[in-house]
Length: 408
Image (cartoon, rainbow, N blue to C red; front, side, top):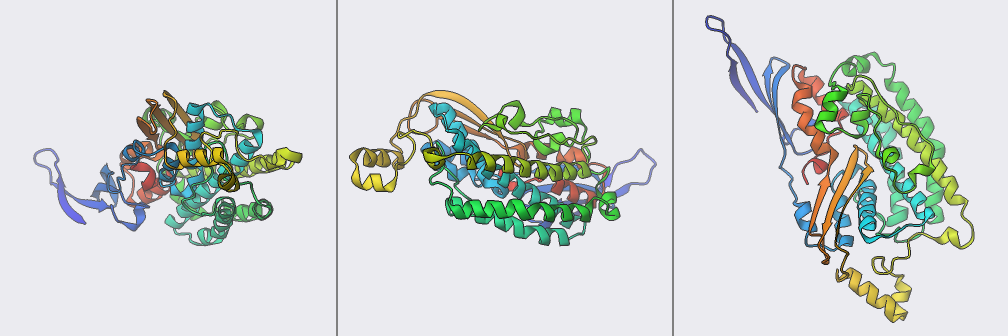
């Protein structure tokens, strides 16, 4: 939708005509249902106004009427490109409130899934950056490995995209041999494919000219807005929740935090590329640690927390205690301790946090999701001002703005 407007110049000057362009809410370049009202001087953006609210689903309000285990399915729909990360973050929040300590093997299995999820997220983001600069080949090439990641999810929990992965205290079942075989296949094949993907872009003149120097934000401005994750690290700040506030035994792993210098579209692309290599390293380490467990420890996949973790189905059919626990958990009749906790994880897009307040009832008194994309989007108007329209599209991609995470 285009509208005409005017730039008001000093008296006696010729008025310069501008155009108002609605980029969204249903434009194919917006990567979701949100709107940017752009005032254009030709191809140059002189003003931008961002709007959210088109897919508001009242997640936080819904959570006030649901028991803890039923809230997991709400978290899937935040950043749906990396749903297991959202699930794990929520379970860690619940475990913090409930005082549940997970075994090391559960932590390592979670790390494998979380890092696969991060790879899937970054793979989608960077391949779409390529598409938005005119390079479709890379996207088609790497999608087969996103499918392999989804196959691993399917082996672990039965679902692919919105996963409902795991449970409070661990996983609903042990990893099958097929799941481990698919993880081994991914670790063996994906590095060569990702190297080829990087070669398509890292020395590509068109891609470099489209991304270097565009969509930049300084470290100071990024911190003022509350940036975290790859978008903050691209600006030169080495903040990573996995290192600064370790969870799920991340302190047991060796990896580096990639950082950029200028915070532009190319730096964001390169930081995510390197984070994929680091995630591959973490998965290998976690896989080796899991394989080192022997005997009964090799079958541990959840914590000993019968009040909050569903008992085995065979026990439900044969044991009264298991039947009681199953009924209370499923029907949401297990009261939770009163308290106030905040738990954050390093999500695909940055610090994904859950602020949970309990008054001792069966459901949360209040729950707030800290969605990193919602914070990035506040800066979008500033970042794209005085840039070209084509640059604004690439900036939208490299920030990895996911509508589901913007508008809870």
